[in-house]
Image (cartoon, rainbow, N blue to C red; front, side):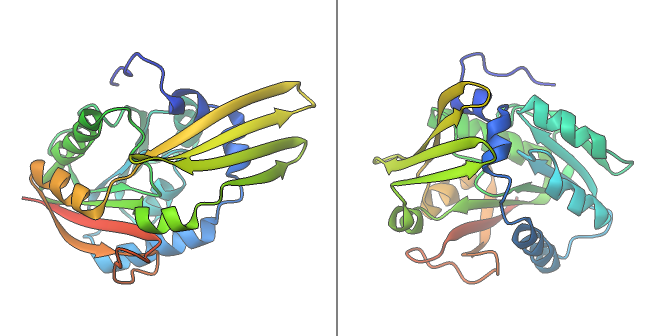
Length: 250
C-alpha cells in the first residue's frame, strides 16, 4: 500500500465524510451500469482479462465487471470506501487502499478504467502526470485505458450557480463557479440534529480533449476513440456532456 501524500487535500476529508454518500446517494446507478455494459460490449475484452478500476469508491462498478467474468482489482484513496468495498471481495474481485499517483502492479493489467470524473482533483499538473504514468505502467503492452471525464465546454454552459438539496434532516446548500483552470462546487452541510455545520469544496481541473491526448502520449498511450456520452455517441467538443477517451499503450 502506498503512503498518501502528506498535505491535506479537499478529497481527504470530503470522500471520507458520511455526508458525501448522503449527497450523492441518488446518482443514477441504472444509467451508469447500462453505460458499463454498453462500453464492455464495444471493447469486447477477452473473458480472462485483468482489469483495474482506478478510484473505484465503494466498488459498485468493480463488482459489475467481476460479475461479467473479469479478474478485477479496485483501488481508491478513501479508506472507508475500500473497507466497505472489501465486503464484496471474491476470488476474482479485490480492493486496495491506494493513491493513484503511486505505482501499482506494473505491467499487469489488460484494461484500466477511470469512471465518472474521478480525475482532475490534484493541486498540480505534475500530480496528474504522476497518476497517468502510474496507470500506464500498470498496463501490459497494448493494454487499454478508458477515462470518463466531464466535457468542459458543456459543463461551463450547464453550470448551475446555486441550489439546495435535502436528505433526511440534513440540508445541503450548493454553490458552483469557475475560473480559468477549474470548476468548483462548494457544499455547505447543515445537520441540525447532530449540530454539525461544515463546508466542503470540490474542484475539478479543466482538462480539454487535447490536454488528455498530449498527457497520455507522454506516457506512451495513444487515444484511439473518443465518445461524447454514455450511449457512446460521437464526441462533439461543444455539445457532448461527456468526454470518454479510449487509449492504447504502445
